[in-house]
Amino acid sequence: MSHVTVDAKVHVDRTLPLRERKKLRTRQALIETALALFIEKGFDAVTLDELVDEVEVSKRTFFRYFTSKEEVATAAETELWDAYVETLLSADITGNVLVVLRAALVSALEGMDEDWERRFLATRSLIGRTPRLRDHSNLSSLKTQERLVDALEKKLNVDSREDVRIRLLGELALGAWRCGAKNWVRSVRFTSRGGRGNRAALTRCVEEAFDAIPGSITLST
Amino acid sequence: MSHVTVDAKVHVDRTLPLRERKKLRTRQALIETALALFIEKGFDAVTLDELVDEVEVSKRTFFRYFTSKEEVATAAETELWDAYVETLLSADITGNVLVVLRAALVSALEGMDEDWERRFLATRSLIGRTPRLRDHSNLSSLKTQERLVDALEKKLNVDSREDVRIRLLGELALGAWRCGAKNWVRSVRFTSRGGRGNRAALTRCVEEAFDAIPGSITLST
DNA sequence: TAGTAATCGCCACTGAGTGGCATATTACTA
DNA sequence: TAGTAATATGCCACTCAGTGGCGATTACTA
Image (cartoon, rainbow over all chains, first blue to last red; front, top):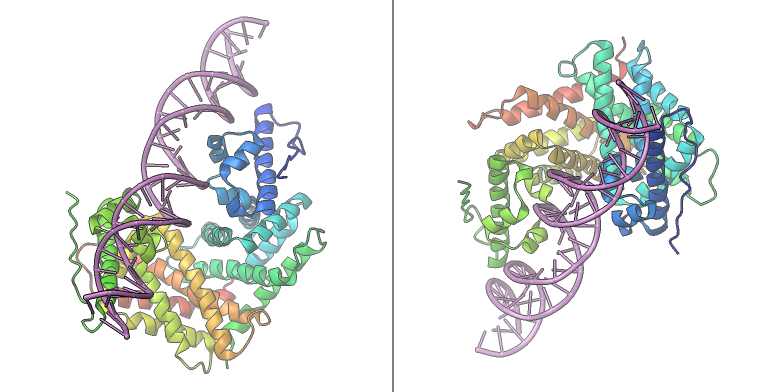
């Protein structure tokens, strides 16, 4: 039946101290088992007690790794946003800022590894069929905007409260992402056969959204 | 101490059937008492049982009026978004679409009555100091985007999945709102003396954000 | 005034999330 | 290598938002 059994002893850096390795394994086990259970039975139909029982961890421990039930399901997205912010922070910002934001997003997306892609596809599939996860995902993108704005403020040495454009750029970048992601969903069938080129298709959709920004402003009837 | 006592028998259309009048009064009493309690003790420090007890209504009934604890605190915002969508639906869309979206927003905002403004200011004050409400408010704005897109699709007879620009326009309109609202917050001190011109200031901030959109796209270092 | 439909109250229940403290495990140090 | 400090985990009881079901009220209608 719902025998999920996820091997936890995978891909953990040997050089790390034992404690850190264990933490990584627990985290991975929680994510993998959660994704498997959620996909099998639906996000709402799985209780935390169920998940926690499967992984053989206490509920208390779960909340030391994730802040909410939603977080464990969308961990892959969180990783992407962390990478995005990181990429922007270590980029030099010259020329058109929106172009830089766009390039950083694409770069972060392309920098994620194969295993991330697998989890990310599962996450997006769940988001697509779970309103609560959709909300959580959207909120994450809004929070990412703020982080981008903070990053821009530091790097450009400007104040977003004096120059609204900085904040607007955050809206535009993540807005393009949201539009692109939406269009991507309808163009992809989430079948169990892991389709190749999913990430490339997503990138394309997001780029198309960025491309359409100038045209949307001038759109007339 | 926390004796909130909100008079419920206020401003209810006499021509309405008794049942409808009662429902309106219950709704108003819930909103007013909620705002008073939340502002006095903080959103998180007030339990629904407390609120429900104060209004002398069962918790079950509360959830027949509002879908969540957050909803009763942000009811004024919801009213604004309903008005916005309504305004857009009954506007003819000619010329630049973003300009139409902007005009409809401003028009909806200006069309709200004095009592709404009072409640809206209370709501925004709560949002400003309550993360959970901030999240809920942001989600509402995202959902409003979708409603705008739906409205545009119908009125323009286009498909947002074929033309990304439609969706982007939703992002832009509500993005400008979010930016404007943020800048408005810092420019206003929410003191108990209800400052005049708050709404006008908000409108100004939002308009400034709209104005800054073209410039944000071309912003360079 | 009887009948019908909407609304409400009550009550028991689920499930996410938290606080506190005892216990176990890892890391550091003499 | 023994002992100790630091950190991670388990356990348990608890709060509180939100739901389902059903019987009791209350308002409309003929």
